[in-house]
Image (cartoon, rainbow, N blue to C red; front, side):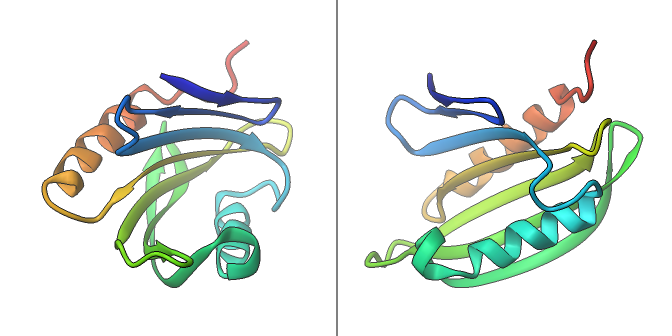
Length: 132
C-alpha cells in the first residue's frame, strides 16, 4: 500500500511493514548516478540525520534501462535498535539533471532477504525513467 507521496518520491510498504519500496526523482546530489549515490550515501552516514547506525555499504556499477547506473547494498540497523537491516538501491540518471533512485528495505533476518531480492528485481524490471 502507498504510504507516502510528494513531489520527489513515492513510498510503498507491505501491509505488515516488513518491506518498504521507494522511488525518488531528484536533483539534490547532482545529475549523474554516481554523484547521486555518493551524495545519498554521505547523508546516510550522518547518523544523527538518517538514524542509520553501523552502516556498511557496497557499491557496484550496473546498467538500468540501457544507462549506466549505481547499485548500493547497505547493511545497518536503526539507531537505538539492534535488528539488522538491509537496503538495496539503484540510481540511474534521467533527463533534466534528475536522477531516479529505487530502493527496497527490510529486516535482514529469516527469509526476508530472498523476498527483498525478488521485489528489487521486479521493481527494477518495471522502472521507467523520463516518461512523457
